[in-house]
Image (tube, rainbow, N blue to C red; front, side):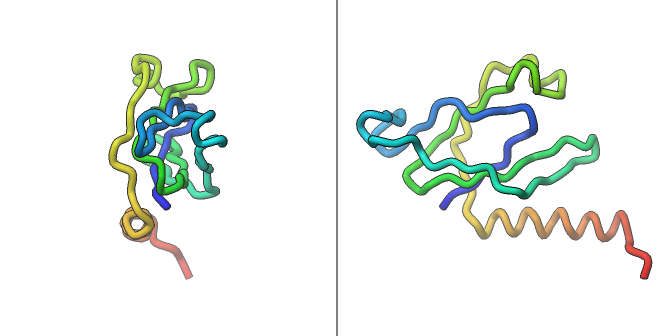
Length: 110
């Protein structure tokens, strides 16, 4: 499996596999892309949702949804192609880094 993070208000567009752009007729199915129930929040409270994709997917085009994209920057971008999907180890590393920052910046009282 491969993974990527996608901001709230963005959607998946075209998808590419080994043979080029994903063709529903050739594969006889849609690509397996699922939003997981894990997100990261940055300092501006922007949520970055974790998505899981099957190994056959090489690249994913993402686009802002005009009515849902919360940031001004998203309104100025037509689409973005994600060419570097990450593996599970990189996801855990990213989540660990964020958790460490949260613990340092927001200590828990016991």
